[in-house]
Image (cartoon, rainbow, N blue to C red; front, side):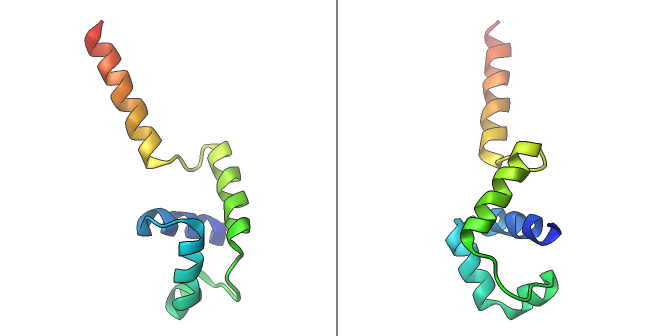
Length: 79
């Protein structure tokens, strides 16, 4: 599970989609070694993992956090 979490973080860092991070991992033996991956997970596995992590509140898309806080700030200023 911790490996899937780390891959989700890397995906956000590289600003790529699920298939993109899979391709990066397939090309990078160093990343696979550091993460302790014997094989690269299928992109659908990463998709399910992200859904579980977002649902639990462990991860939140950076874009939505910024939008929500900006909207709350504007609403507070207009009152």
